[in-house]
Length: 313
Image (cartoon, rainbow, N blue to C red; front, side):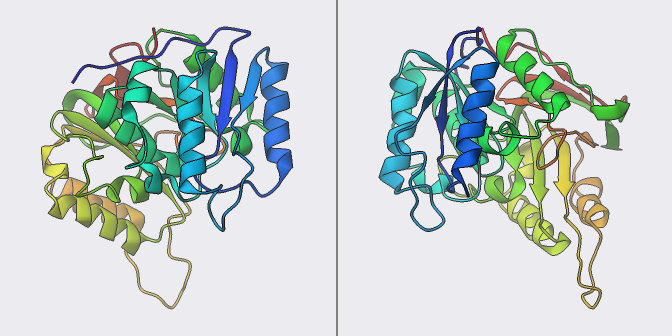
């Protein structure tokens, strides 16, 4: 596969905002993010259908796809950032014209439900995207300085990303060993939903990053088991576990394994590749921006993640 990289962002460039999943709860999230990006010295272009609503979707499938196509076709737009996640992006996968994306590569950023778009785009085009903060979630008010600083550094620099967790909390190792490969993945719930489809990246020689939120251990178990039974995890080169936020059983009457026990069952007992955890990425306030599709080195012996190439040109 030929890897495609977008051009880095420069002050004064246009940032495009789309909403490919669920609608925002209030207009303030859009207006606040627009004001923030403008205050940082950028121009903003809002997708025509961003504020549409259709139940739990931000408009019809056709309207959301139209905004994706329009932003990639707009030569002035250099960065496309999603307004929020939620649900609905997976409905668009077979409706997107991936040739448009391949011919007009640009920075594309989001996480959570956006995981399906990022992995499908990588599989179909080879474009490197960014798993990172979203406009109406992270950039409309009470902006976390650490998250913002990391985001701007990542979208404006062609240098390989350097990982530094918040407050000096380092990565930890579940399984030792070293491996190199292209980083794929994102939200476990969404990534596992791609199983059996043409939008799931090939596993051979990849480092699989996973995160999630609000999923009790037995659901994490079920999703990991789906990837195991499909033979997917047997072919990857390594695993990078990010933040699993509120993934605990809260019902005192329901017996449960811990999240750590589930992870150990699937990785420590059955997988013979390096597994590193404790990455500040996902549904957390301090959210690292992580390139999807670039080559990395995962070092379980020394608890390190090293990006071996730039993510932008």
